Structure formats: structure tokens, C-alpha cells
Image (cartoon, rainbow, N blue to C red; front, top):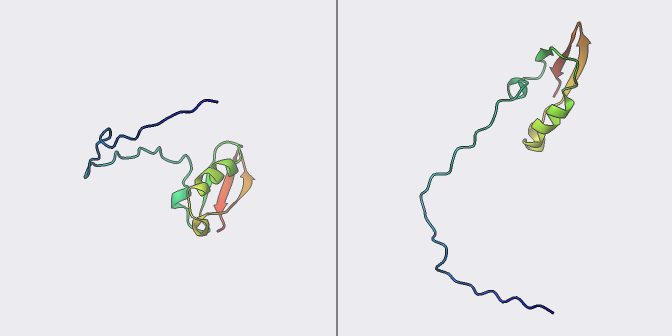
Length: 84
């Protein structure tokens, strides 16, 4: 049986105060989820479903602020409406 002994040394780590945190660089959303109001819509140029991207966006929000959408094919694209 191996026994590991750890010795705690308080002077090994220096605590510093009033150091600014680095800013988080976030890339902009591909679709305008953050600016859509209920009833607003936009046209996607491709035929791909936006639901997986919406799930990723909604995970960052509290439950009461999550949005819901509905989609319909329109010409060569897909129209996306915010419904909640």
C-alpha cells in the first residue's frame, strides 16, 4: 500500500488584489438571436435547420429568457420566426 504525504506550505502562493480580469472575446452569433423580438423573422439562405444553434444560444440564458422559434421553407431558404 502506498501512502502519499502532502505538506501544506502557505507561503508558496502569493495572493494579489485589484488585478483586472481579461475581457472575454466572444464571437458574434451567426443568426440574430439576441435582437429578435416576438413576431420578428429573418431569412436563412441555406436549408440547414437553425435548431441546434438555437439550443446552444439558449443554454447560455436563464430559463425564463430562452426563446422559441418556428420555421418554414421559403423559396431557396428558410424563414425563422421568434414565437416566444
